[in-house]
Image 1 (cartoon, rainbow, N blue to C red):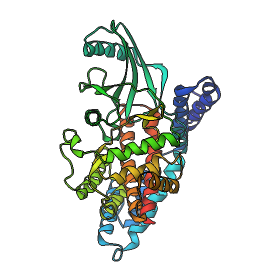
Image 2 (cartoon, rainbow, N blue to C red; image 1 turned 135 degrees about the vertical axis):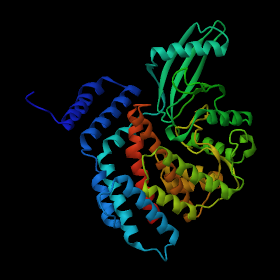
Image 3 (tube, helix red, strand yellow; image 1 turned 90 degrees about the vertical axis):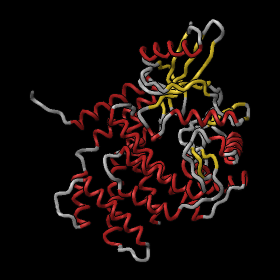
Image 4 (cartoon, rainbow, N blue to C red; image 1 turned 120 degrees about the vertical axis):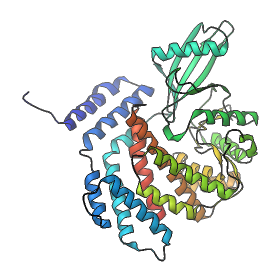
Length: 447
């Protein structure tokens, strides 16, 4: 062999070819997937060697550790240092080396974001939920056809399965089943190896409880826990037709429904969450603990800035009202409207019993920012539903939601690395989006 092209050049060629020759011929969800592949290729070309050994040496020198020190060892020591620093209190803490370590860690995050920029760009350009022309795998279609025939008690004389784009926690399938009686449309919501540390049976139980209380959700028909059917557990719900894109009129209806959700009797979820907080203070503690456990159960090691933030949250996040049903991911894209009404609120994987501020601040600072800015949301929510938080309360719950997002996003890269799903969106979520949220979180709590 006379030459050996670098891996960087090979990945650049992949990205260049997709952009020049493939993308112009595509549209809709397929084009969005191809865009994500260009981001993955450019990320692979740009990232170079693993920076963690050099970073471990920087932290070891900062903290006075004798070399050699692995990244896992340096990160664990840094976590203990930062947590202890928080516990000492701001008036008594020894700023060096804790503040210097925080500064180093934020610099590492900024470098990660620069390298992962192509992933973040293509993730941001990913389209909203829509049904593509892409069918599921033939073996999956056959297995689902047999399963639906058994579930309905009638042979599926016609059967079509199409992939729904836009989701991340679940793989979504649009299914049309024709029997001798009628044709019916369903959505199959399939787990993906524990993305966002959630599972479908609890989500389905929440939706059934809410439907029983008259809240607009897609009716859940069946829950299948046996992963042998198509490889992962799933549940099936009726397909609700309508629009996902939301104008201000649609948002008014959604905000009214979210406010209504927060005033439902939490006892309707008693069977969905056998371990629930007893007091509002318990609700705050359990929420922080939940996401700390989620990150630690999927991460290969400690993430010092997450541990640092968890300790900050425990002393700054306070309840704003009684316990209520919390959606956890509310806003545009997670509800369907039709004829001026909210037809269904969707994506209940983060639902729990907690504090309403989690939802309102999440809407204003994360999911709703493409519609209007944070200050505009504050004014709008104050006018529409009387929601108004003091600045320190708003900051604390903003930090909590960034913490929740950064912890949840780490699970996506763990699923990607395991091979359970090879979606480029999961890599983008677990690297670039995680780093962006964590950097913003760390800067916020230091400000």
